[in-house]
Length: 343
Ligand SMILES: NC(=O)c1ccc[n+]([C@@H]2O[C@H](COP(=O)([O-])OP(=O)(O)OC[C@H]3O[C@@H](n4cnc5c(N)ncnc54)[C@H](O)[C@@H]3O)[C@@H](O)[C@H]2O)c1
Image (cartoon, rainbow, N blue to C red; front, side, top):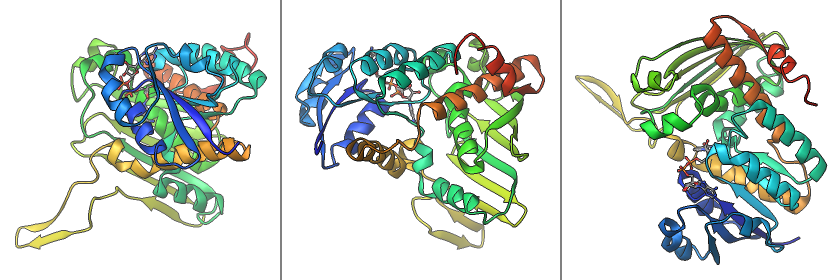
């Protein structure tokens, strides 16, 4: 295969971003796009040279010319679309999380195993220049045995009310990226989770039984300990990681639009870090879709697969239980609840 024909399902924030990045790749043609609000995207899709614009994603799935789909619709639509795409033999890039339900994600693992299509989970941060360097250094043993992981992950501003209502909560919507990065940089699965959570930013989170602030303690199978702190409102985008080990420590700081520092009699000032995920992870989003396309073209394994999606969801569900029951939760406790399902 020398050219991949793609269909994009869902043309909101992330769907449009992927189109912007994919259209610059050689060996790729974005043939079709689907969105339930097709009128909203018609002009934009035409400007991007997309041939087929449809309100029914099955028109993409049933098109024999399409090799792969990008699932960028809301999370509660992912399960059915993944099943349909896998059945039709289309390779799948699916945004995080794979689903809200662990039972459904586990069933999808089996569906995907049988279909043999490639499946990449949208954990873009692994493709970030800083995060990937931390992983590289830790896996090369440069910090020795990892002892302590610290992740600070705070959004500049909370999402709107409708988003909060439907996003599945802090852990599965936001912290899930941090759970993936934790597994990625430490190179070990999480064994136990303990959470302290609070509503400190906006009471609207409480209306939906959600929280906006959390301290998440992790214990990894290799013995390392980790802590993630999340806030839905820092007024700037705060994304920092540290791995401390037996031989040293690696840290990454925020990314800034420039390195200018203004020093005056009043103090030292610099611009705020890159505003939010679209800016901060711009290159990571480009790298992740490129990696997916290369995996198809070269028939090589994807770099972030369905198991990565599942493992991060396990931690998210354990975190939620820990918060609700105010106790440490072992991942095993969550997997034991899935006993009737083959993992
Ligand atoms: N990786 C990341 O950094 C990242 C960032 C944001 C969102 N996401 C994930 O991407 C997904 C979409 O989020 P978003 O912020 O782009 O949402 P969004 O609401 O901006 O866009 C979703 C789009 O999907 C469309 N849609 C709804 N049902 C559909 C269906 N059945 N078929 C086709 N289109 C349909 C909607 O009309 C909308 O245009 C979510 O799963 C979210 O968790 C990932």
